[in-house]
Image (tube, rainbow, N blue to C red; front, side, top):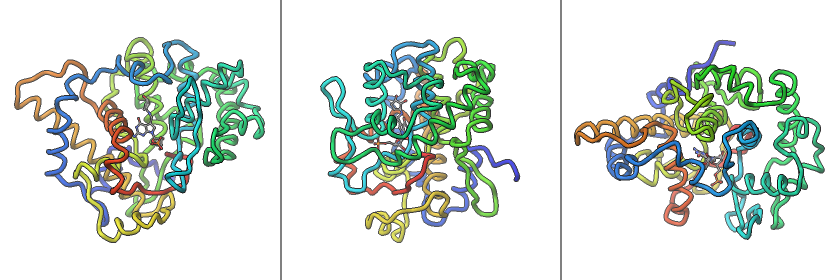
Length: 339
Ligand SMILES: Nc1nc2c(c(CN[C@H]3C=C[C@H](O)[C@@H]3O)cn2[C@@H]2O[C@H](COP(=O)(O)O)[C@@H](O)[C@H]2O)c(=O)[nH]1
């Protein structure tokens, strides 16, 4: 099979051929102006402090935490908004992606070595159900797939990288692209690819967020000093499209909007699902470019770094904090292990 286009080229190709999703250039500019005050202060060193559940260290154990969590970083959305999986940890009730992190930290606190490949390569389904148990009647979605992926991923990490994700990172020799391709080549559950307009395309959402979280947990230093980190695009999940539509940078056709409002599912790889994901990536690339142009026009230098990763993190956090304001904008419902 032909090698897929890179995520950035896939996004450009989809945006140029999309029918139901449009990147609005005026909206892109307005979004960049809205984000500019915050953008100047974005720094990779802030990632850890951003959220209490992120690992604190920058060692092998922290990398194993990131690898195991990003191997399961998919599909947390609930069938009914009011009936969600919830994990209580340290006095807080967490939902969505944070419920996953809270469950991992809860297990570690109980002495279960859940982030060690030697453990999760042979963990049983019953043990996985217990580790990720919800504190409500609603279980975490796709628990069987999460079990299968843990066994598969753990076995491969043991066989090919001595059971340590640090070895995989060091093999990339400080190239974000090489690390992304190493992960996709060796770990099947990260192969987030599709067919669109006669071309093979790839979004590699979990492989790219894994590279980004590796860069972040290592604070861009040592093995994490990727010279090509700016080549990583935004991560095409189901939250970012929602916020981009809310900000007016992305537009859905009436037909698509109606479908999403009714809560209809889109299958992974459907034309409209690919258009949503591809246009979202392209939209964030253009917002990033617009931020750099605005800074240039104002003769300002950012204190940190303006790239699609830090822009994505900011937008994702913004979406989390403005969930209610965005309730009129539907997110697309796809059940899969890729995002
Ligand atoms: N584009 C993008 N998508 C991201 C993330 C994250 C969390 N990562 C960073 C955030 C904090 C830490 O600093 C991590 O570095 C999770 N997701 C996706 O969202 C969905 C979960 O949403 P909800 O159901 O609301 O929890 C699901 O597809 C999940 O895969 C991100 O950052 N960007």
